Image 1 (cartoon, one colour):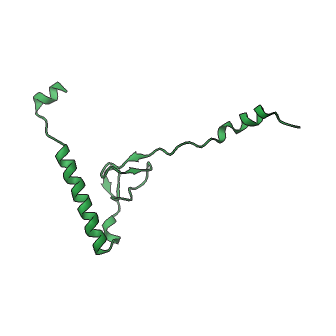
Image 2: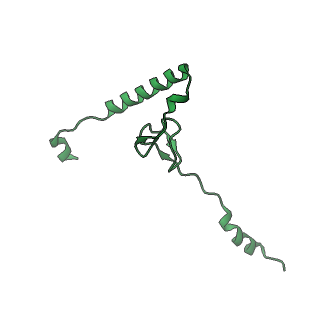
Length: 90
């Protein structure tokens, strides 16, 4: 039996691809797939699971350490302490 175009298209309506939903790493802020260890820093759910620097050679390790320290410094500078009066206004 021949199927009409509309019946064929209705059947195929569930074959559409959905876009990948990324989440941000809680430690370094890079985009990662949910429920996956961050390949950049080795953190998962706020704790370090893998030592990423262990497998790198000396030159790459220095570069990565410098990148991590810069990120932590910028993160510390953006977080500013609020006194109780400022907190009440927010």
